Image (cartoon, rainbow, N blue to C red; front, side, top):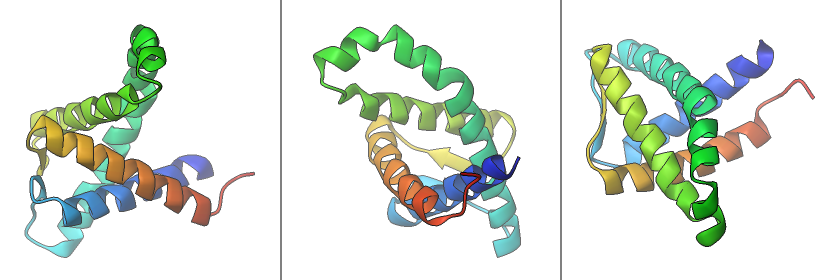
Length: 125
């Protein structure tokens, strides 16, 4: 459970950095508290999407991983971010990613920041 909380906090921080850096990734809300709450819910959704869908996509695109020497990971991360944006839209959350290339850059930012935060934050190990 502690590991889930740490990963959710790292994802929320990484998503916040992506929202801050990219104009086309938007998070709207009336107050800072509401934005933080939405960001945490989006981080949970992003974590669930990465936990459920990403392994299936990786297995199905395995030949492309070999062919592109792993660069297809950028596309897979972008698709996971776009899927998260779509789910958030269906749940009427104020998080939106506009466009594939924005999702590629956003996925790269989220991966780097999430990795850095996971190094800094305490873990079960």
